[in-house]
Amino acid sequence: MNQDSFILAPNLKTRPALHAFGVCDGHGKSGRESSNFVKFALPIAIEEGIEDVDLDTDEKIVTLLTEAFISVHDAFHENVPDFQNSGATCTAALLNGHRIFAANCGDSRAILINKYRKITVLTNQHRVEDESERQRILEKGGKIN
Image 1 (cartoon, rainbow, N blue to C red):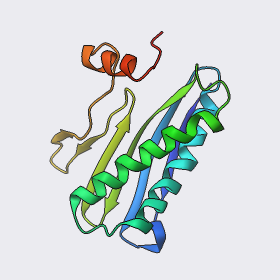
Image 2: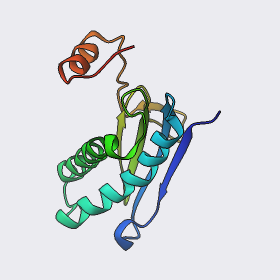
Image 3: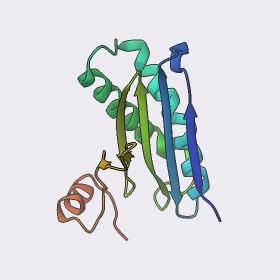
Image 4: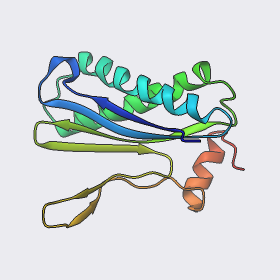
């Protein structure tokens, strides 16, 4: 069963140079609901954040993406059945003109391949095999199966 969802949100807040793209991968009993929730909630959270900030610096865009991911995470348990045993990874890119900003949650990542086939890794995977990530999850009250 495919539990992937794709984010496609062009022209955020009617800005012709601001676009969001992403991939969500649900897991667990409610994996499909999980990825669908993130698919719809993340672009809304980004758009709501745009209302509060002028995107004139890279730091403001990074903060916008970070706060959007946190907002979706905070709303997740109210909107997804079996949220304690289900979830979704998400990798998203925000294009602002010629600049690309990438963010991820979970063991997915974004890479950029230029026209010369040079690969640049844009995000880090959050994997429980990484001891610092395992510790962070446990300190936040998360469960590891």
